[in-house]
Length: 248
Picture 1 (cartoon, rainbow, N blue to C red):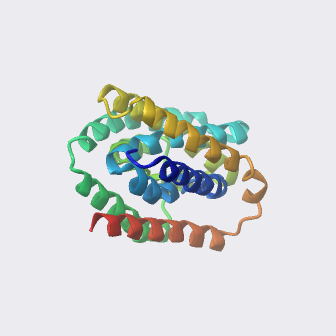
Picture 2 (picture 1 turned 90 degrees about the vertical axis):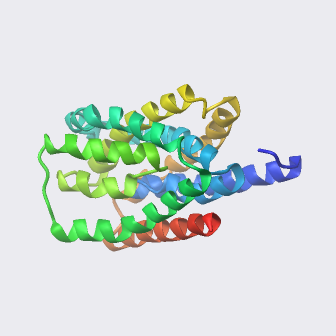
Picture 3 (picture 1 turned 90 degrees about the horizontal axis):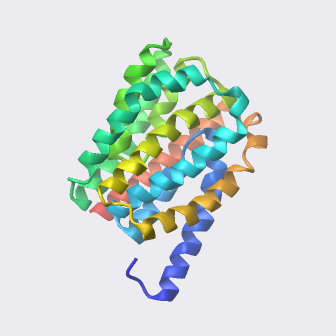
């Protein structure tokens, strides 16, 4: 990050404080950690570096959720989902590095805004998924995860549609996403996008996210569905508009 020392320290202070809050919120609603952080990371580190940093932060955030909800995880769902998600996330990551930084900004911002009506429509359909159908979901979400920073918001209806709720939903979605983000991080490293500096940035920011996640478990069971939806859509709206504003 080519900034004066004071500016670098200020940037880290801002991102880490927001990361602490993002870890709490993400632990409560099952996603949103990386969505909240994305505009700040794009601003301070640039869009091409922000995505691999987010991948590292997501790995740490999902590890914390897996630990918190380990006994509630449906491991069969994780296995079927990642059978297609892992190879597709590698393909998506290779697509990402060929895009210009402005296009990355536009894709990230537009994707977050589009997820709001898409998720509402999926909720209205009230669909139910079988185990084998999670493989198709994994392929689509895997590719999108390789291209954009996070797909947790659009991933959510499919895991809920399988019948997972609360701790089972948060833990299973986190475990499934964890394998995707590990594959994404390895791919970025092989493509030369992740270097020592990016790893350090991801670990520092991810540590604060990890701390925040630890405070979330007590809040999950008391969160109403209405508050959940407002939190989710508010996060996507603000972050999407912020990233599009930077792209313009």
